[in-house]
Image (tube, rainbow, N blue to C red):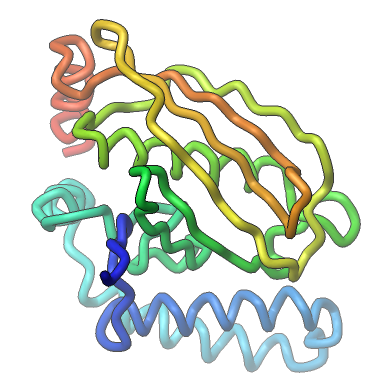
Length: 215
């Protein structure tokens, strides 16, 4: 039986392809560092032309936000796994037979914190993302109100990171989940999250106000 993908299905065309190419650009810039200084003026000029070309297609912010949330299925724009977001690491999560989630990702120098290792904030983002999707797969759309994370071992740049996440239950309007990041057999990060249901009146009102304030 074919495994179920819990996150957005990557595409090879359109905005997905542009986002993927931009990730390659960021990786190249990060790896090159000051070695591009001699060619920097020409590179900046080329990038400014591309930016203007892309910006010509962009609607205003409230309209873009509304368009994003009209899309069906998992968020393609999420900064922790959205195929349309060039800031997002290329994370895909799959549903295991027990209902938990499992995925793999390899991160480059753009995500470095300590020398040669992944930034702790990136690890926290991956965990928050995976725990939220585990809840959503269990039928609970919820936002994070607490993330308890433990860094047990540093994650080397370029290593294959296994992401594991599971929904642990609901207590009233609060939903809980937990997970870990592993490299091989080594557990590097563990996390437990507390989330509040999006259909809670106070939560719903908070997010309803946001587009009006931005308009």
